[in-house]
Image (cartoon, rainbow, N blue to C red; front, side):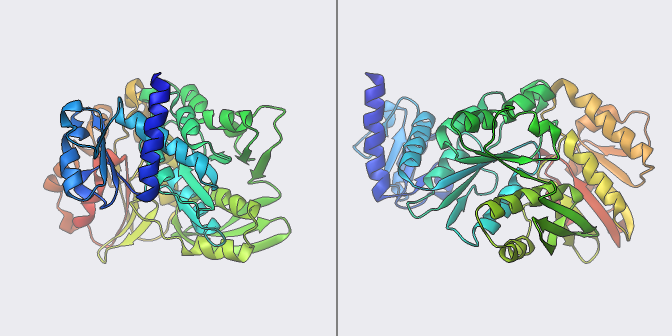
Length: 435
């Protein structure tokens, strides 16, 4: 009975959505003519803002609170999030787009953006905006696709087991890749094995449904996730498709080989750890028959933003800004790459890594030990986790970015090459205003 009622509501909603194909979940940036979903969170109830959403131009409001339902523009459901996800799943069954899913511990967003640029040379592409890659962001991305969308690229993030599997059931991808397996969100996953199993849920779905899997042939951790008999794979980073580093100071320049063809690509990306992200996107472009010339142009046109792999010249300093995400698998490669860069006096500003749970102290100690072993000077560490681990070391450590800014004379930072690396929660981007 409930399932039939739910399906009737979804069909009713989809009729409205078909005439008004916009969805909003936040009244602060409501889209006039949209369907508003009053989602719940730990500290808010979106249904309380349904009236405001209608006043600002929403055509209807989906809520889970009967007291807020005053007329037929309010659609009451048992669970607004579940309804949003079911609506997205229904929409997925209607649109003809081929869907490409990307997950992994590091490099998801960069790979997604590169794939968008490359595939956009030939197809009408819609992809995840920013990193809206969770149980809310994936449905919103799906609902932003139209019948004209030819390829959809969905970034899938997770911090607990089962989340990738759930996203696959909503999005039902036709293709997928895992960028890598690393020590991210260990608090939720419990161990690196938990990370591997959860990211592998994408491959499990694709193999079960006989879909196409893109595989880094040089990554044994990812290859282990394949069933031995599964053959519907596109391998890259091998003899057929690879990239040779020409230069990485400051931007990556690669000699890319696809079968018997080679071309030089001058990227705007900082960090050798991005090579495999680039090759994954090249593999996608090659599979969908985008010419090598258009692949090259798309890579060179890509300008990283949102504090990922950026080189910022402030006039006073040159800053390697890579502070949207950080975990034990990404910080040391970032430091290694920075050490190889030539030029000015180098300064390291490293923010703590979040969501590591019981592994936090040990993993932060490893970062400190690595900096010490490499004889790094001018190191500034930020965050409680580093404060706990840094005892007895000579590195300067601050509880917050604000403490660093108050206790450090920023005018002394002149003509430096500065690495800013850390988890998003540190808000390290605040340092740009003073550096």
